Amino acid sequence: MSNTINAAMVRKMFLAGASNLNAKKEWINELNVFPVPDGDTGTNMTMTIMSAAKDVQALSEDVDMATLSKNIYSGAMRGARGNSGVILSQLLRGFTKGIRDYEELDAAIIADAFEKAVETAYKAVMKPKEGTILTVAKGASERATELSKEGADDLGVFFEEVVKYADEVLAKTPDMLPVLKQAGVVDSGGQGLVQVLKGALDIYQGKEIDYTVDAAAATPVAKKSVELSEEDIKFGYCTEFIVLLTKPLNVKQEMDFKAFLESIGDSIVMVADDEICKVHVHSNDPGLAIQRALMYGQLSNMKIDNMRMEHREKLFHELESGSYAEIDTEINGAAESTPTYNPGDDIPLKAGATAKAANEPEVPVEHKDMGFVAVCAGSGLADIFRGLGVDYVIEGGQTMNPSTEDILDAVAKVNADTVFVLPNNKNIILAANQAQIMLEDNNDPKKIVVIPTKTIPQGITAAINFIPDMSASDNEETMKEAIGTVKTGEVTYAVRDTMIDDVTIKQGDYMGIGDSGILGVGNDIDDVAVMMFDKIADSSTELISLYYGSDIKEEEAAALGKRIEEKFPKCDVEVQYGGQPIYYYIVSAE
Image (cartoon, rainbow, N blue to C red; front, side, top):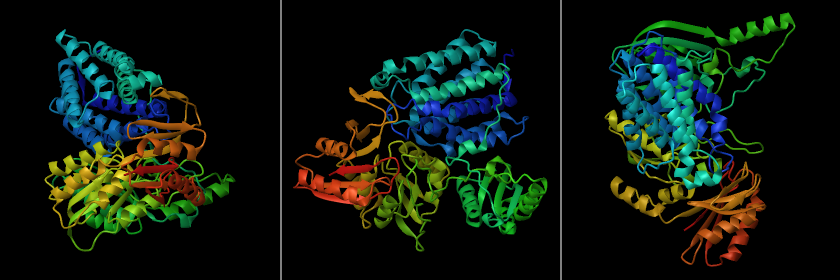
């Protein structure tokens, strides 16, 4: 084995790590402590790294280290989803900072890059907790530094020892976090990181594995095979070209260009570095895309295909051969096989659930000082937020954490100097904070203020307490103070047997989950909801709110509301349609 690696090998190792994580994502999802049907650590980490992997795979094998590094960290930063995804993106950001200035990497440089990765990730988390992905990353870094100081020059041995030690640290995470030990699992984020490292090690050792990545893995909506008619092709021309940039695009220019492409078509794929921007779009007017692109530079490698004509020819040949097989929606390659998840799209739901897509953004005609972006899943909840003055609703939350790029895109469409972001989920706050940092780093005059709402009721309370006549800073303080008065709970079902907080949970049980743990477990949804209110309501409670989900009928919710009124006669009880998937009820006491 060599004692150095070049950018071509780093590219292969990164793609192999991403591919291995993708292959293991469902297994990692099952390691989540809470046995809820939306355990998504593996999914979030996969979508984060695949956002970068798509950019990296588009690079040639003779890419230089600086370009490779930029594509890795920028792709991961934009695509980061959930706490685990944001932390992974920060690890990649720090690591690439440590390698970007070198043509060849030896053990000492790699160890230093590991150290920068850990330092960057720890800074991104307000209250770092041991026994998590951070601990596993720190263990790998410490072992790399130790080996480097011992004079390790065989990178084969170096990598193998680092991965082995990371696995050993992962095995110890249950001893650091009691909740992991009680649930009988290791940390899911740490496991995801180990799988990335193992994939990278496998390709370095020359194992016969497919390290190419599936572009569809970076999108949350499952691929569908359907029989298409020509009328199903909404946009007729597949347009591809490369822009030879006059100067690098900044984040705002990238977002504006992408937003324009989305306004004229679909199946958008756009990858940019300092010198070129690769564009793919399905549109009915390719000239519009070309005209806009000319604002940024000269064009090359232009290709326009008439998809309706191709579809007609394909049908003719299939009928002629007597094999009228299913026609996949994948018309022009893997990148188009799955609809891109954008704010306003339908989200995937469990069987039997339904949801209405969030509104297309109602961008205010007139500029204003302050605006709002909120994240939620469910048409009823989206309507509630819009009714409270929220400018843009990102469809997401428990069943799908929006990425940093989704949040940046939404903020860009709000015509205001300051945009308050309501994540409404503790697993989205880091991505929102990352969007805020990226906007500041690009000296964008628009300001993002993240109100750290961890639940839907907190988000609603924040929006209610907004006062237009107050300054942005005063509103921020008021909203943060208000959300501290809200106690919340959610009713869902268990997907496996486990034990949490000394409570035995069986697969199929209904669970009431509160701000700090399990509030009730049982075989009846309403009984579990009542158990939750027994824990979160007290003598000071004045308002009780129930938001019922897509699996609950209106009359069922009304009956539960009446039962709550009888139990808490001094409280006002409000029952509203939320339409959220997975969670039968979201409740609050104020």
